[in-house]
Length: 120
Image (cartoon, rainbow, N blue to C red; front, side, top):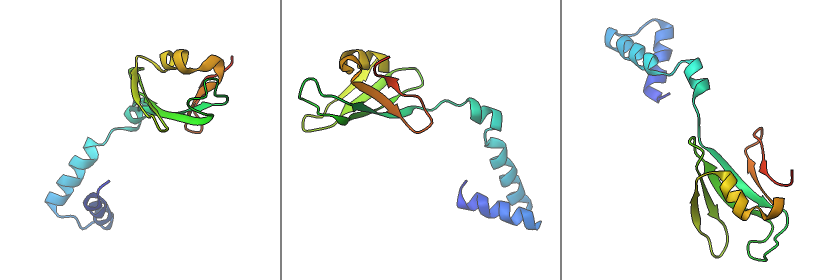
């Protein structure tokens, strides 16, 4: 919430809002998503690609790339290192099919989210 809106909320709790301030506060509150809508909202999911073993000797081991999975399932991967590049994929599974090195590379999402890839 903006500072101005927070000040209006504070003043409303004291009961000393002017009519135009009350109208602005009502309009701002009405524009906020309700809890059910907020829970349904989808967000892009950032991740890092973690490689346990570097089979090619190019990327090394550890966190070798970062990216995001968009709400439509497409993904962008930004490779780290001296020869960095950015690639757009139809899906993260497609990227891991090409760069997963037989399960040696996995997508690691924020804590509490699933890891994708790796040996099954």
